[in-house]
Length: 82
Length: 153
Image (cartoon, rainbow over all chains, first blue to last red; front, side, top):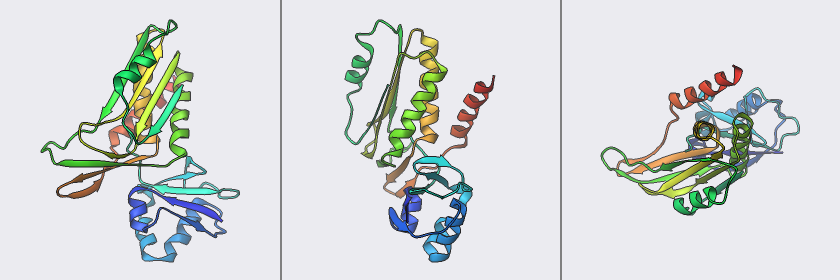
């Protein structure tokens, strides 16, 4: 089980901030493909992954990052702090 | 080196005073403060600042650690707020202390450039016309490229 977190408009589009996902996806990109097949709201949120950023266990990474041993994956738009 | 992520307001004068006073190792303290800017037509009701608890603190500490590697810093402070912020409220501040002003200025700018697009915060603006997520700007990403190029020299 992996905790999957969503922030900002990704959270709004999917309709929840966090969920537990049972997955055998090898990489973040594989997980995204799995989620997209679930429901239209996931497909809408992940329509253009170039507009998204991903963190694995709270470290920014790429969509080809492996998921083995990972506890937490977060999806969000580019950050706007400061 | 200090990082604080908090919902409540901070006292800018007291923070900078406490940061600067009582040191004899640093001849220069630089402070940058970020303020919630209204829209040009004064339409902004509020801003909601969302963040990723846990990752936010770690990302800011990582950015601080990188600044300490690059410049001669005696101390460093980042305070960043989240939650509901009204126009004119202080969102965040950084302060740097260094023996000389050059390092203090550059490190403060580096901290700002990195935390703008590498710390997990997202701004949503609420006006009378509705609500909108603030989009990241290309120039913010360009600012990082500049520091990365400098690092290779």
